[in-house]
Amino acid sequence: MKIIPISPPRVFVIGAGMVGATAAYTLLIREIAWEIVLIDVHQELAEGQVMDMNHASAFGSGVRVRTGNYSEIRENDIIVITSGASQQAGEDRHKAAETNANIIKEVVAKIMKKGVPVFILMVTNPVDVLTYVAYKESGLPAERIFGTGTSLDTARLRFMLSQRLKVNASNTVAFILGEHGDTSFPALSAATIEGIPLKKYTTYKEEFTKGIMQEVRESAYKIVADKKATYYGIGSTVADLVAAIIENKHKLYAVSGLLNGEYGHTGVAIGIPALLSGSGVKVQENYPLNSQETRLLHKSVEFLKESIKKLGY
Image 1: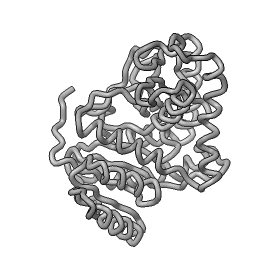
Image 2 (image 1 turned 180 degrees about the horizontal axis):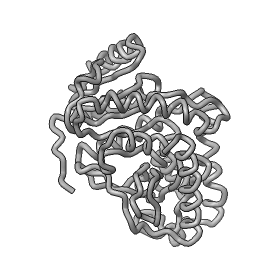
Image 3 (image 1 turned 180 degrees about the vertical axis):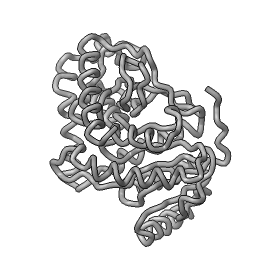
Image 4 (image 1 turned 90 degrees about the horizontal axis):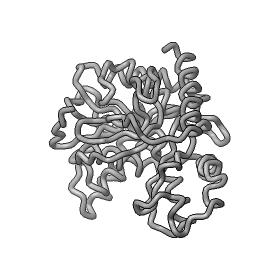
């Protein structure tokens, strides 16, 4: 694929609630984009968030943050979509699927009004289903649309493993794949610690991975129960994914990517290892999975296809 020059890099964040604002703020303090534009149906909210962030930028950031509108979107802008009904404590991410799908359809129509090729990063839940909705509604090629997928779940897994093994999380390479939800699974057969296979690492114990997937899932629900929403983790995730595109990182992430025959499936977006670069998203076809992990991936695909079908796709 041709590498797309993104200069000067500009990011639109659709939705100025806690997730959108935290993502924008993380982009600001990490100076990933030259300009960040917030759009929200509640203009006062967007203006308040922008004012607060601009005051923070006085401590050293040269990034411009402002409110704006869809008509300003131009070729190769990165559009981060966080709009939608938020998850309530104890609520399944798919409960708001129909409501959020209708919101996403409206948002995507506004993004694509001029028909310019952009990059769309879906954050709104259920993220895999809505990534597919955005793909179908936008008409953009698959490499220009992706969702946060299981990238935050993966970060949680790596953190937990690093705590148990007493290593730096950045040296832990392990992915959670599948739906961003209850059919996700840890793909540990190919996991490594500092380049060494997980099970051969000197401090590894079998007990470290027993029940870890349940811990990852429950941590998300506990955060929502305790503080009503998750936003620091997902804000940092969004910033890292955007940086991978802008900085042409060629780095592997567990994002919600469109399958077109990879792993034997089509017509679905799912958390899968994909390379992010200035070209966009490239799903990795041959990421090593053992037989159990392959079975769990198929199960997750079928669950998502059923969810997509219920929305008329």
